[in-house]
Length: 289
Image (cartoon, rainbow, N blue to C red):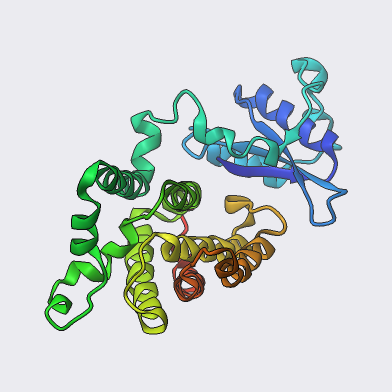
């Protein structure tokens, strides 16, 4: 969905919603988006981009005048009492509707789904007894002979060492890689995946050696990517306030976890994060209009 109209005055957004309903018979989805001070809201109207009236409604939003009597139609359609809802209270619900796994919703995020299923399938094979074989086949190259196995530079990202390791990475991959694929296209996500998997693995190997597995370097690249693009297209990505702070805290905690016996790929996290931000700067022109 894309934002088509917004106002800091809720009544104006409701008026625009009702005007569009009268003109085109289209029901807009309304959200109250918290602003940075956490005390004010932006009242925004959203519409699916594939709606046949999308362009006309975008044009109507640009010329909408709430003081024009021809737009004051709430009393005619009887909708004004249906107020906006908090955007962040519902943002995750759209991933788990009855149509979540329909082909219409899956096709735009096919690469996101492919990597999700691949990581999950590999972990299932580990659990049922193929753990040693998978690690031997997929680990980062350790000698000149293994350096000829080109896949080893990517496959460490697909192997996970525990269910929580897998779950944490796939949760963030599913939410934010899917967002990137929808907004930027499958090719851009594929480029981001392979660049971040390759470079973050090389950096981690340089600083800590070849004993590492997991998608976290790629996940941090995905998070860095959406962080930058959110600056240019806040209506498309709509990241919550404090998102950057959350990422920095996550990186800092990575250096503290050895105290409790958990070792994380800090070099992969940081390098992946940087790669994601740099790629976002070079690829922002590919955002779908």
